[in-house]
Length: 233
Image (cartoon, rainbow, N blue to C red):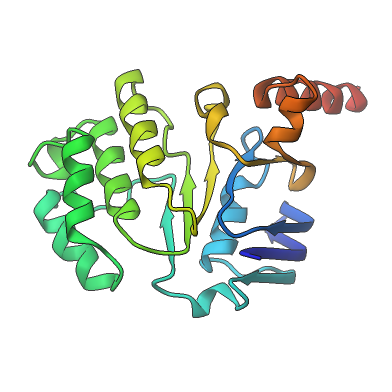
């Protein structure tokens, strides 16, 4: 087992971001965390990364509390995290100093594959910044990768490059957990999908089982959320 959440809840003021979530993710799975805005996806990833603590329940990653696993979890946040003055060379030195499992060779392979120019962040486009940050995260040789909206708000060409790099980066022994709204484009990546709505898990299925029923992940998503919305009317 790679990740386990048992009875996890998290609130921010009066907002209940996650409510009594139970989840078990296995080693080597590629998992899609899917749901509308405000469903709790980013909060879930931050709890697994050890950046947040649950108000109740337990979060266990690789058999330990996630805060004890520095250097074994790679996390790409939804918001940019690199300082504006850094270019690829500065990013390399920055990441190598912070993360012992950062691999320089892999980083430069990704920089080349993603077409990132040797310029500081402040002079890059949004898609180029996203690709540079993704290269920094995927260059870490870890057991858990957490990617929050790696395709959010960027152009089609950048999306294709990112998806290609994600496919190349898959390591059989690693677990990849991605939150995204780009369901159709990432359809073929998933081993498993978890649908969240208003902080609750409303579906947790193997993607192969959905396909065996004649459903795409996107089709299942539309079916589930239309049904959920109908129940509220």
